[in-house]
Length: 223
Image (spheres, one colour):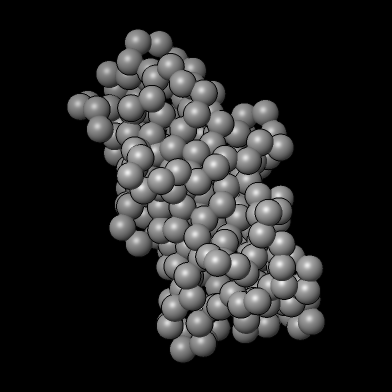
């Protein structure tokens, strides 16, 4: 599994929206260097992750920006594990989330439109307490496809060959905690004139995570 490394905020903030994969994919491989006890509370609570600001994708200078991205509870996903499984003395707390939707997307190229398709409806997410705490979501192989049309017709497939974990910084808040991504993921771009020539795409996005059952009780990650 290829694991993208977080980039400095001073580096390019351009990224291709699909990976915005919000989400709270709770998987621990990207966080192996920070193993320690983790508790996610409240136990059993359902949560929603909603984009604040914009999510951006950058593939070789082609920028796709999306204004709406949400991962909402349903079908038994987006749930903090019930006690005692919401605590792990040896590492991350993990669970399934509904893949985020991506809407209201545009590009930095004139007369070029963009759409983002999420092919797998369920992702994995891991939360790990630390300094800082982190959230890692696993994008399934080929799980996000960004398509442009107009003067440039291109298709960018995120993590085309294998599942890929992307890590973000978790910050406890009240009533909303935040999960911020500034990272990269492998990508394959197909198309003709005007399509970027790159095998890596940047992704930046910040999600507010709230307790869908009781908004006054924030979702928190502690050691």
